Image (cartoon, rainbow, N blue to C red; front, side, top):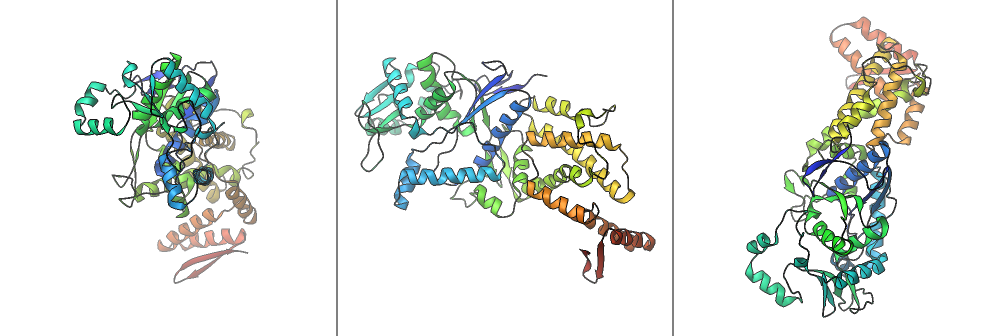
Length: 493
């Protein structure tokens, strides 16, 4: 099955056919850097990070570009409140962005263009729009003439006549009187300088770019006239992405992007996230509470990427439990590989009939269907649960039900496919486990706790022979149990 993607522009799934065979150009509309990133940003960044990883996994040479909007009214307002500058605010939150994304195991983009570093490209694009009669100057501002672009609304499905019929005449009149627009639907490409604000010189006078033109210029400068994938949140479809199309295609006469992909929004306990409701959660607030970053990734990936997702305590706890299951499977090789005499070279291992050894093919069949990450996760959980089961059997019976060479294939498949989704055990956790297992003859803390629980169940059932057997087995591994009225404690000798 070939990779298919749901294209917002055509409103259907389409087979992915890049402009240049074997390569994929991808642009993600990034953040406006005036505050810390929140859960909505986390979802978008995770979804498009995994999309990029998957394209690479299936063999594409991906060029991934993500912009920073570093000139905006919100940034200027923050600077005024703090008594700082636009540059200081932007730099602080760009650095915070990288810190948050690193904690979520999000790979860095190939390039991070900034609006303030693309002023020449922005002005050049505006001049071209003027020459083609799609833009007009007005007292230091420059506006895009929306009605000049016949296809305006094709991405969002909106029609100007419908929007006009639904608008308030009072608002339209006020808008026309308060601005220099010829039409209420026109939008700013260049804004005349205001006192105390940063500005750049131009043929229209000192000013700064509008938001929409920034992305059009950055896409063109970094990826060319037509790119393969343009991604972003569903909230950007209108007006931002609609306006990008109008700006870029009016100049080039070519599609800005062949595939428009949009992720769904995040709600908190069923409500839109907002500071006024007190449910605004930043990424660092969530992670500083002790929530595992991999649980956050798993929470995001369990939902179909185009659908809304609701953040609740129950949902993040379920994701935490799920990550613990996956993590146990991912650690299997580090815990038991030596004991099972693994070869360390899965490419040379025999493949038996059936089982989970076709996991890669089944994973790809799921995800090829419009980035069906939940379907891909199903394959991962099958592998992890089987490995967890076999690890438990190995601890208590000294051997596994499935041949060791087959388990090695399962484990390598799990590690490789989990990496495609960015679900990875940290190097620190692996090192800690290796120290623990070496000190206890291959028994990790989790193994010890499981055996103590089984001993407790044996004692409740008055199966004292089994209880003594477990105690003696642990003692032989250098682990001493201490029973007390409050439960059983243990320590390594």
